[in-house]
Image 1 (cartoon, rainbow, N blue to C red):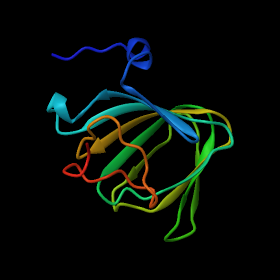
Image 2 (image 1 turned 90 degrees about the vertical axis):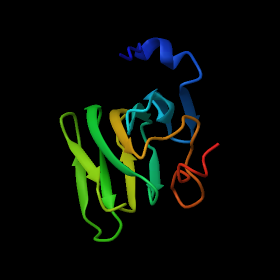
Image 3 (image 1 turned 90 degrees about the horizontal axis):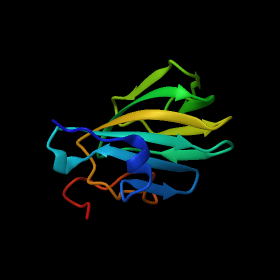
Image 4 (image 1 turned 180 degrees about the vertical axis):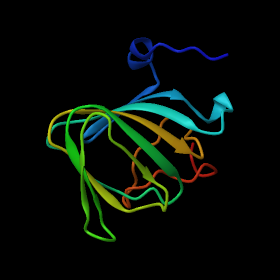
Length: 130
């Protein structure tokens, strides 16, 4: 059984900070669950172009408001508490934070822990991650 406290993880090396967001990685590849689980905060005013070409991601909005734009179709979806989206086709997208948003995120394959987005908006493939 794995039990972790979000507040303790925030203060340790499981927190990763980057431009426009921070992420607390509660489950990682080394936990051998087959996915990773993160609580990510998107800052108010952030506009993040991302393309997880090496991962599938599912996201649930816990708090805050914003939007996600599908760059293949131009369709924009409102994000608010209770809304979930899944990037099941490695969808290239822009995530915009109208207010600060707290998101619960699941990645498959799991991340190793210190990843940040590269120049294409992706995390490295699991075998490339350090």
